[in-house]
Length: 281
Image (cartoon, rainbow, N blue to C red; front, side):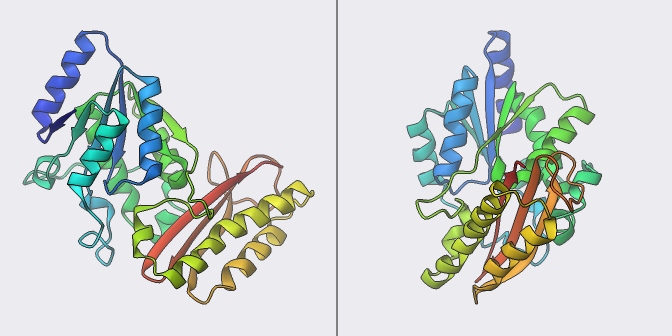
């Protein structure tokens, strides 16, 4: 496994593979790997001849009062885990490499980024779209794999790729969960034992929504009412949002008629957690 930390070297490697007719798979990450990250890498390996991952904690997607400085990092551990999965290249640029002095070009995806985390975290998706667009330019992948836990991010990248005619296939991978149902996240390390008990209410509320839909419930207010009651039962849970949205457009949904995203965000202790499920009426 090779570790590359400059844009020019990464582009040279990508160009060489492409000249050889090799297919490049890519998984962008912010590091501090858990099994969810590794599942994305394994999936990318099945779709390509060469697998590249990036490790870059992107400052432009963090707000001024968010956890950029505190975000967990452990490069040595990450490299060992990536090596064990069979990754070919780890691209780990510095902030100065990605955002050199005078940097002033950003990518803004419009409608799909307005609700949910876009409303709660202004500027977040501009940072996400910009860094992913630049990573695509450098890594030159044929296919890129993103986790569905960050569902709005996945839709944002798909929209960007389609709108800008980027020559890359974007693949979503199902949410990977802990044995107790908690969606895997690097921020789970922030949770105390008491926090974690309440954090499980997110996945339990999703289960209840799926149960209601399976029994024929289609009224969005009824479904969201049940979800919010479960979340509110946790003294450490502060709901950011619990919403039903069209699974493709993220338009609001009052009555379920097709695939509908149930998206959750909540603060539990010092962690902000997100989770979701697509309800199929």
